[in-house]
Amino acid sequence: MYGELFEQPDSIRKTFKEEGSNMDEIGQKLADVDRIYLIGCGSSLSTVYSAKDALEMVSNLDIDVFTGYEFYYNKKLDNKNSAAIFTSQSGETADTLAALRRANDLGIETISISNEENSSMINEAKYPILTRASHEEAILGTKTYVTQLSSLYNILFKASDYEKSTEIVNELQSVPDLMEDLIEKTHDENKELAYELKDEDIFYCLGSGPNYGLAYKLSMTMLMEGALKHSCPLYSSEFRHGLIERAEKDVPLIFLDADYPSDELTKRAIDFSNNLQAKTIVYNLKDYANINSLLAPLILVIPLEWFVYYLAHFNGEDPGSTRHIGKVRY
Image (cartoon, rainbow, N blue to C red):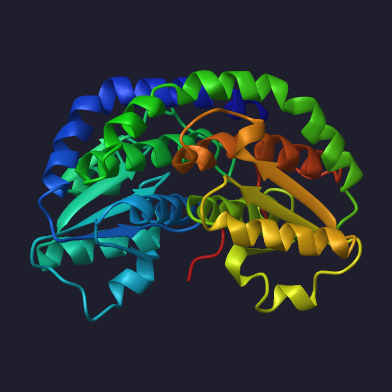
């Protein structure tokens, strides 16, 4: 994970260089469809959550998100002028691959985003996008996450009617440089934070808009898979529906804030947590980069990766390995 974390900026640069014209064409095709399905599992599900929330905050694109098997078993899929984007690091995720094959059978236009050139998803989708992150070993996904999310943003904003879509697409080009800077600057403080919290066993992760997808990744594939810590992701607005009863003194709560209109509720939850003397950890976009807030997940993921890497390290765990994933099939 340590080495792959440093490879993230160049992975985005190479993907845009090699797949730029392909993504332009796909974006143009998506502009003419009536509905777009986004499908992924695990870390890939987090990228489609972020993409959906980002586009639905500012555009009229009709987007639905599914996990692989939830898409596969859905009886109400619209195959008239619709498209489906399937995301997977390996291109062999069984759930997502089954969904891709069903979409092909239904005549839905299929697009895949994967990191493995000879994978089933690259070979079987009508319009494949190959991310250029080279092979990734760490299970929790670093460079494959950022290349996948960048690709989703690139094609979907090009397909959208958002008046600042060109600005977003242009700012995506600056993300690798920002990442390189943050990889250096956020290391020490997050190493220290991880040491401070190494004995905690459960973390709650909250975000609004596109940051919910990152909160989901942080909780599901970073803290649980990478650091072997119990964790739960929530939309910030859901804080007062359940978690408010478990937020107590010294309970770790991680908030992602990008000053979205909906982050009014994030800030209320932060204030409430501080009043309870919970261990309130806030990652605010404005502390890391001056960039369109819709791109926040691509920025905030960097300090979070350092935090999770060292949280695992200080507990004697390998953040790139697994105990059960890949061994159990169901």
